Length: 239
Image (tube, rainbow, N blue to C red):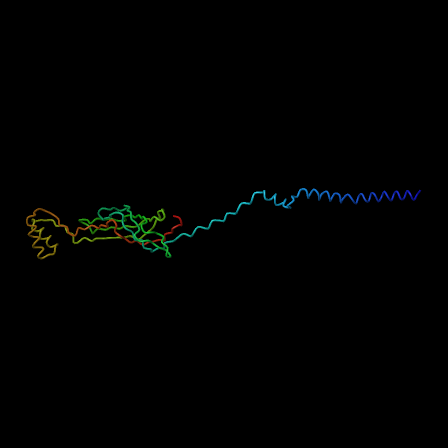
């Protein structure tokens, strides 16, 4: 009886052990089955999911840095043509005038101020030839040049013109026209001129004045004038 009971107990233990050892295998096999069912037949399940995701945006390259500004050095010559007539008698200090660049300006072999670029200037001084004073004078400067549509202020040397008087004299008659004629003749050259002047003034009579050498300065339109930069001119790219 005892042997049978022991056999029964041993059999029960073997059955329990067999049941316990078979459960993980079943669980593993069931997990494998579920995994296989979830995976597409072509084996590209992961790729299919990722293909539906939005593609990352392409990176935009950074724009290149702007080129450095161009510097027109001090002392560079700017030759322009006047856009209007200027004169010691017709112009006045502070008056502005127009001009155009007559010759292109280059830096390192590259044209930076093309011919035909607009320019502006100002009359610094203008004195007509006076009857009782010294000679005539006219002084002008450039104040700006337009490059790529932008007016660039500049500082230049002045272009000056002077005209000295030629022995102007004022003669006041005390004794008649002959004295005035003699003075006029003397100013014209003396000697023979004085005799001719005496004859010319014989009938003049009264009191008068004689003037010689009256000549004002005129710079006509389209006249070519050269100025020099007194300070560097910086031209920014795209101006």
